[in-house]
Length: 94
Image (cartoon, rainbow, N blue to C red; front, top):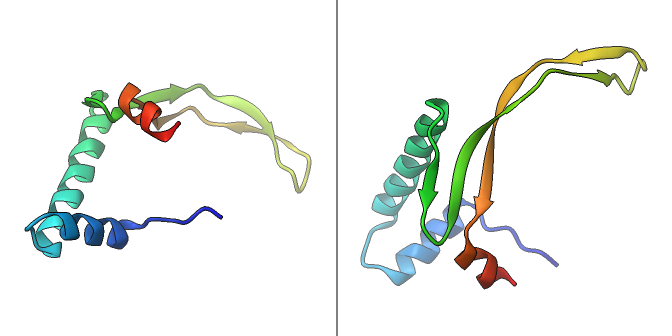
């Protein structure tokens, strides 16, 4: 069975290993995700050496089918976030 680690659980685990308060850790995590999001919005790549790389990828418009009506619809072009795991993360998960 796969378990799920949410933000609160992650904050607790980091607090157990450091002398930082949960409030400080939550601020760091919130700031990190905010800065990664800003960078992706500005079409910048974010690399955390050993962990992985976040980047924005453009997806072209395409035709799709509405599964309820079977009508053909146009799915608009959009930019989506992508994550590529780094070598150290890949090796650790093997």
